[in-house]
Length: 348
Image 1 (cartoon, helix red, strand yellow):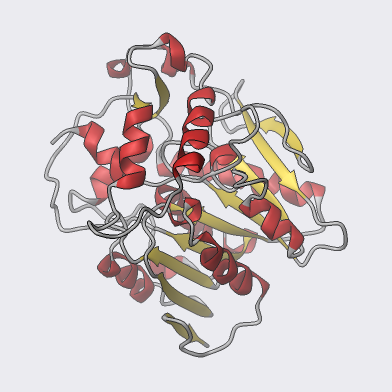
Image 2 (cartoon, helix red, strand yellow; image 1 turned 180 degrees about the vertical axis):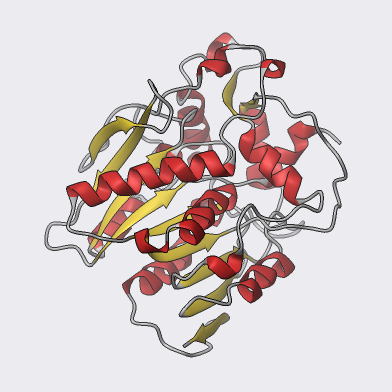
């Protein structure tokens, strides 16, 4: 099995590309804070509403690109963070170590075989906790809701299971889940890997069934790819041009798909939880999401929603506003026990 192919199935979080990477977007505040690793800093971006916030939300990206290429990506001048802020949410987004504006692991300057996979879920969960503790120190919020995508749902769920006192609500969209050993053994894993522009282009187009129109506009894809390559200052020094990222997220996925379990118990998650997948998502299947849903036995409320004609990258696609509305409604509460628009509710 080729590891390079496997990453194509993993999502991440998306942000603004129509501005030069590293430049503070209009209306955003940015912060640097100590990470759990001495000498390395994490990066947080924030967009606060004009009035008193309804809730505080932290956006958690996935395996191959940072927050500025996820929730902050502005399609024709408007991002998901803009939408949430306008809806009254105090919206934050984290870059994990090794991505975007956060520091790089020193091992990322070494050959990939020189160490173990960087940035696995337990380590990333500690980074999320550090971010939430910082957010609590800057706001009146005792607990913070999380919106996580793809591999990012693993560290977010791990923290929710370990520290229910920190988590208000949990949204998992395109979550990955254990499968029955379909990949077999794939170790040893490298410390980091490189993702080319063509790798990203392929994964954005591969899930749309033949005969259906594309769900990502070409002009948006071109703009996104330019910003993606700019997220790594050394991308154009490599051949082929590529962005270097930690391999830990891919190692986590391969472990799950090799028959291993989550590094946490779903039954330990107590926060109200929304699970969302796209109809055409192959990385997060209907069986995957229903298994997660069934395992959430301690939540006060859980909801499972499928968005039609959407892929693993639904937050980048033309139908993204349905995702926005589903997530905003769930984050706002109160919960309603009903079956509406393809969403399965199990409210208590």
